[in-house]
Every structure is written in C-alpha cells, then in structure tokens.
Length: 277
Image (cartoon, rainbow, N blue to C red; front, side, top):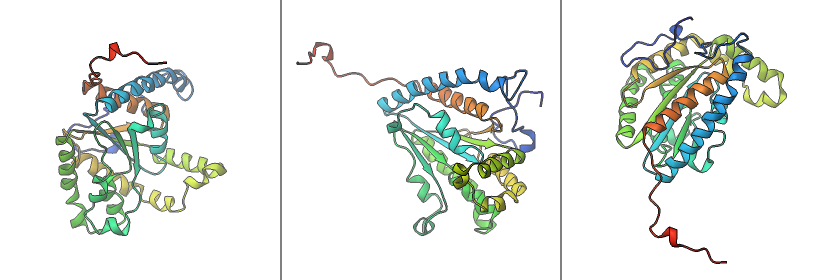
C-alpha cells in the first residue's frame, strides 16, 4: 500500500480488515526493510521506553488517573511480546497484567463482564488486558459457545461497560494487533523449531487457524460496533514487531501526556529538614 494507513478507524465506519495492511510500516522505510528499518527503530523505541517510564511514575505518584490497555490478536499475534517490549523499564508496582483464559465455573455463573470488572486497574495504575471482554464476541461467537441472540447483545453491553469506566476516570486504549495468516504460519513454525518455545504452541491453535476467515469477520464487527468516542480502537499493523512496538508505545505516551499529570505537592517544611547522622 502506498498511501498512509490510518491507525484508528473513524467512529461509525464499517471496518474491513482487507483495507488494513498488516505489513504496513508507516514512515520507517529503508533500502532493506527487514534489517535497516528495524535498526533505525532501536533508538526511537528506547527513547519511548524512557519517556513512558517517567510518565508512569507521575501517574502512580499523582494517583488521580487510570489507564486501561486492551490487547487483542489472533494466536501468535504478539500480545506477550508487546507487553515485554513496550513496558520494559516501567516500574512493575504501577502496572498490572491480566490474561483472560477460559472462564471458570464460578465466572460462568455470573454475567460475562463480572470477571472483567474485578481486574479494572485502580487510580494511579496502568492495567493491561491480554485478551479481554472481547473474547465474548469473538471465540464465543465463532465456536458457537452461546446462541447468536446472546452474543449479539454484548456489543451494546460492552459499550455501556466501557462508558461506565470512562465516566469513572479510566482512560481506555484498545489495540488490535493485526497480523497476516502467512505471518502467523511463520511464527507457529518458529515455535515448533525451538524447543524452548514448544510450550507456546498447542494443537488446538490449528483448529482456530482453520477458522481464520470467521475470526476476521468477528473482529471486523467488534472493531465496527465497539469503536466509540470513549474507547477508540487502534488497528496496529503487527507483522513487523518493531513497528508494532513503536506505534503502541507512542500512542500510550501521547495519551498519558494529554492527562496533564503533576507530581503531588510535597509536605511543607521539607527544605528545613536535616537528616540526623
């Protein structure tokens, strides 16, 4: 694609993922796209990490704002890698990561958002959802785990839930890590070649891969129906990991900077304190 690709679809736009190139790499172009561009991205990414570290410290100290980051992707889409790379250097005391697996019996005995709400970060914290409430309109839909009449209502429930969070002071960033089916194949093959990565591969991943087109349609609907003013979706080209990390780190930084955070005022008289020997 020669033209600039939008990161955020317009609100109300019907999303067609074929219009979003997962191999897109924005302005980071060089003679050898796989090597030179990646090398050129090292310094900007490190700068972003250092900036994010400073911003997260102020967020934690001020304790007035909350940031919730939602990561969704197909298997091998890079959710874990994004967290490791982008949040490298950030104080772990101020960050919580929740990975939502198949719901437990207790969770299934409640509404589908019950287990999600319990993990929403508190003020001063960055919370990261590695998969999220969107599984209830993705895997639940494609695998026919509940009737269509049930999951179709969940788009409105999700929008209302996210509106409640936003009205309560939670800033929401949602990222769909968009990889191609060919890229997923390469990443699966890498996992099979390296014994240390075998644990990341399950035979069931192939059954999900076989329904790729169905999952893409489910993602398109989630990206269309749940793209709101208070919780915008970002479609991140994720075939190139370095570009993915640059885009996400920059977006988080710009979002935190808009919060206009300040360190709390110090106790009066600190300038007169003498630390005894």
